[in-house]
Image 1 (tube, rainbow, N blue to C red):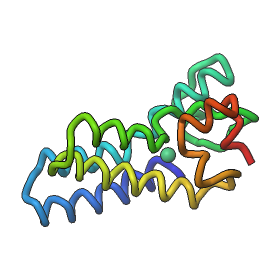
Image 2 (tube, rainbow, N blue to C red; image 1 turned 30 degrees about the horizontal axis):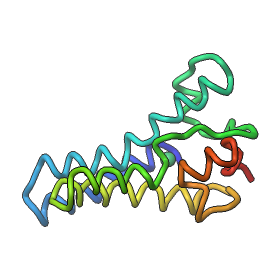
Image 3 (cartoon, protein in one colour; image 1 turned 180 degrees about the vertical axis):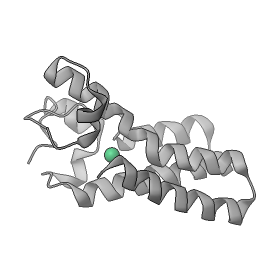
Image 4 (tube, rainbow, N blue to C red; image 1 turned 135 degrees about the vertical axis):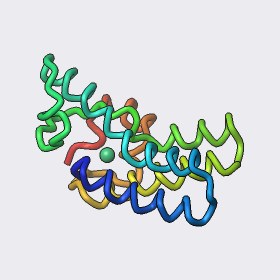
Length: 132
Ligand SMILES: [Zn+2]
């Protein structure tokens, strides 16, 4: 999904979160978690093509046989919740993070959808587990 769409959805959700909680920091965490995950596309593009291009990296239509999107991993959420426990900030992070991954899961024609967004699975498949 395009970053602009992720930003728009994340902004709407974080505004609703703010009206419900009146917590601006938690709302910004929700926005950031839902939007900044896509930063890993820059690393992914740079590893695959051995060059840097922010514009091409964020297009997301250039995937080859391997995908190194390290932040698009359910393990990140699990680790955050284990380290910081359940509080308004981790709930805000979880809402932003989960909506991003769910949108991506239903937007891309990836194979092994339930497993493909686990970093562990992608490592075990030599980063080929996401490619359809
Ligand atoms: Zn994404």
